[in-house]
Every structure is written in structure tokens, then in C-alpha cells.
Image 1 (cartoon, rainbow, N blue to C red):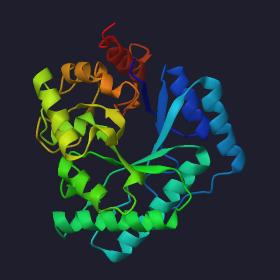
Image 2 (image 1 turned 90 degrees about the vertical axis):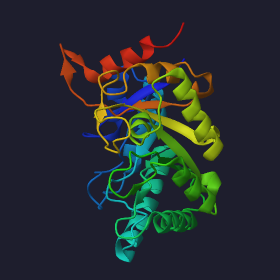
Image 3 (image 1 turned 60 degrees about the vertical axis):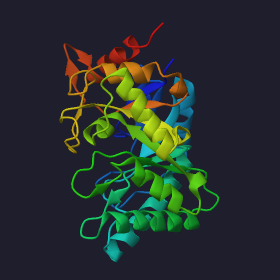
Image 4 (image 1 turned 180 degrees about the vertical axis):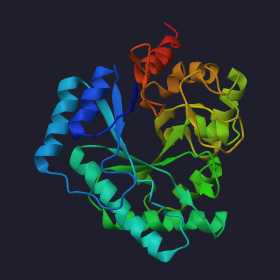
Length: 285
């Protein structure tokens, strides 16, 4: 059986994300550990962290993960922003550790005015510095596959392999595979044959063992558009079939999968509940 959950808000306290996950029938939960559009972060009180960890246990929510700030850019050619991003990512790992979160999902970064090759080296160097400053911390970074908007890196599987290969502590890295992003980046998954071929390609270039989490999102944008726009499951350009193949892929039955689809309600039902039901309905019994 697939392990399914969603990204939840921490408004009102970290434990609120756990409560929202339980209310909507999630097995797992993703959250931000701070405001994702600000550099500043209020320290996490020990009691706050303890309440979150206790809530997870009491509510039966497993596999908590966090997502880093959207401001962080480890590929930046600008030294000031690059160093600021390193400092911010160190804090992301420290906060995750305090909350008992094993993985922090991160967009690799955008090279802006430099080049793809320089950007990838910059990311690896930045992560090496992050790891140097966080010795003893067990929380790991999961590089997210991206759609490839603008100069964003991570839309080619080779990008992820280059960063992992360039890291001095590759064991502290993994991958979060986003279905919407991979589709928008131009990797086909519409037929069973296409899905298996894409996974074979990922395995050859990066390694399936590196996938520690999935973001399960349909795409509002067309195949190969390199535009990042999430849609509800089966309500976008992907349709339900790619999710059927994924839900029944026994290689990933222990890898948690998180919705990042639009929030809201429909006919009085939360959209997260609806999307989870669609995914579970695709699982062969």
C-alpha cells in the first residue's frame, strides 16, 4: 500500500500540520519550518518541537519532511546571495533536526547569469559547505526534480547526478521526485511503457535508491513545457494513468508520497481528501 500525504500549513503551530494531516486521512506530512518567503526565522522553542513530535506519534502520522525556503539559491553566481543561501540552508537542517524531521526537500537552484555547468558546481560546493557546518546533524537534503523554468537546474536527471557526484558527503543527499516537474521537463509517463522507460533512465543516471520521497502532482502545463504549475490528480495534462503506474510500483511502496496540489473545497469536501481518494482508488487490490 502506498504511503500518501500532503503539504500542510504550520499556521498556529507545527502541531497544526500534524492535525491537518490526520483530519484529511494522510499517512505522512510535508511542511515548511518557517515562512518560506523570508530569510528570518524565529527560533523553535523546545516545547513547540516536542508538541509536534508528540502529535505525530499520537495521530499516527509518519515520515514528516520539510521543504526549504524559496529564497535559497545555491547555484547563484552572486557571492553574497550564495553565502546567504548556505547560511539559510544550515538553519533549515538545524530546524529539521530539532523537529525530528529526517529530510529537507530543496530546489537545486538557478544559475541566472552564469551557466548550467558552473551552476551545478556551485550547488555541490554550497552543499559541501553546508555539510561542513552541520556535522552531527542527521537530517539530509533531498534534491527535487524541477520543471526547468528559466535557468532553474534539476530538470535533467543528469543535473541531480552531477550534484551528488560532486558532493563530498553524497550519503547526506537524496532525491525528491516530483511527477509534475518531471512531466513538464519532458520525461514521458503517459503509457506503462513510457513510465517504465523514464524510471529506467532515472535508475541508470541517478539511481532509484536515491528517491526518498515523491511529490505527487498533476500538471496544468503541457508535456515538455518547462512550466511549473500543479493541478489536482487527473485534472491536468498528465491524467490519472501515470499515477496508476506509480501507485502500483512495488519498488516505491515504502517511499512516502506528498500532494502539493491546490487547496480548497469542492462540494464541501477538502481537495486534499479528494486527491488522496483518487490516488488510493488507483491501487490494485
